[in-house]
Image: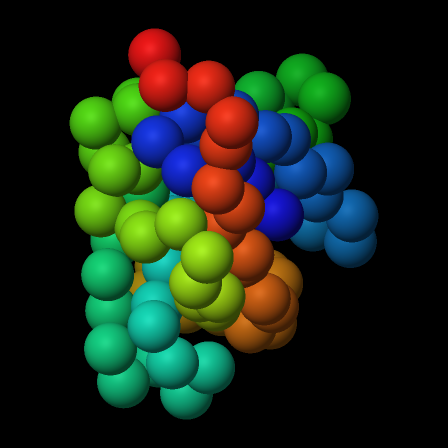
Length: 102
């Protein structure tokens, strides 16, 4: 769940794989759980020392998501050797309205 029109920052710990920084990881937001209506694809940062995947999107980037709607997200990874895998399967992403108007 996240607040409408706010900056989005979160971290994921990668278990079962050692990230070396050559991977390309994306946080994908979709209107449908089957991936048929992509909305946003956010490139992720990688902390190789701690095996952490970081996601950061500005307020303006996140403004494409409507308050009160439920979207779907997943996390995908591509490697230089051609491996493509889903790190997090589709999950609900709920956008909540906020009370402030700044």
